[in-house]
Image (cartoon, rainbow, N blue to C red; front, side, top):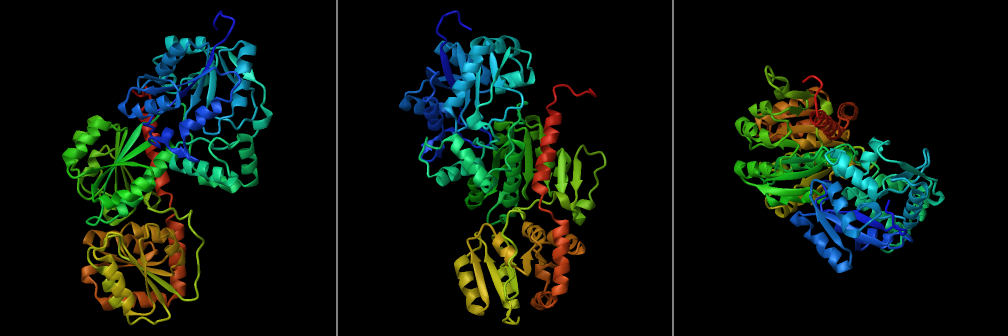
Length: 596
């Protein structure tokens, strides 16, 4: 430490707008104030900290942080985007610090008393870094005091280490003998497990807002000790973000880019299931995710609602330029319009791993991983000589909804048939089904989903409800889980919806829009989860009516289909694919592969 009598103690908040999992999170409002405001406000209550600064990057995006700091009177120091350690060293130099309290910008419940407790322990024991005593429980997160000497040693002796550069004090945790480590005694007020109290994802933000509301606390008023007591009394609050995985202190896996098609021309199933996969990559595996969407603007809505950045593309050249600019660690392809195998091969120089979902074209041979449900097209592929690892099975089926986070199954007094022909219904199957089903007994309740991309949707809905008194419409619904929970049988256009219905235990009759769809639907029929009628254009209205009537009048067969659907389609495809790809990235990022 410094030879001067007075030890200058400063707090340095690391912050940037380019967070991988929740871009711009440091300025997102929490209880009406930016997240950074909460951090600064709480640090000002410290008895020992003399000055507070923000360490951000030279990226133009972070001009917003500089402007916020200027408006709030908080100095901002800028440094390399890819070197957090260098930013801290620069801030320590500018502030002439003897002790630096490293503060993460994602922990809004910072407790100044606890920070002072750590700093005092560091000084009393003459350490260069401080942690809690072995076995001491503490709910606090996001602060790490260290001496200027410890920071300088990191710069000199570990400045090239990726953990030191990205996580700074994380290097001490992996190398406990690198500097003298002080041990702080338990801090009784916070001596309990806290769970996730940081903000890394939209669900974390929702949790923080929810507990502020539950405590009736204005910005800066939510005391961490009181919050912990609340969570002990009402543990159900933790369910909001309990699934989010804390990022490892090992080098991060980087960014994933998902290319998919969506809109009136393509439907919305690809977008829905890719959002589910993106959530699993972000929340459970710690990767940042963005989208490249080929289609129409309306398909961006579910992507942006889930908190992901998205770029519209209309050509492969645009897509290739985006890949070159981002150089994503992981590229995932799920669409109907390319790229071709040759175009994908050309992208490989800018990505670490490439994966494809449900694509049986030669594109699959340019990828590292390919994921399929066991449909005939996938089972017939030849993989000889390919570097691709095929994953084929029901366990890899991707759904747009999680069947484990849905209302309990509702049984009404009248049997309910759900008719859902996709978000855009390009063949007009919704109205056709309404006409075909008109002779059905009026005791049946029939609900027709009017997709958001359906042409003349309002007029279609009006014509349908005018046909029969037991006809009802479902309009403007992105999430059909409530409808699935109430349905006894479904008539649907084959696609992602067919898999979701099976996972929810809803027996279904499938109409294929194409020969390819009909072949795929046959696999679900063979597995006993539903019944495929083939290509819609080749099926008569009488055949549709007969199939529906037969199943609506056969409760035993429906129960059998329900059981087989629930047993076969567990809804875990997104989590499995995310974990599989994250593990492959981890192995790919090993500095030296033993076999080489």
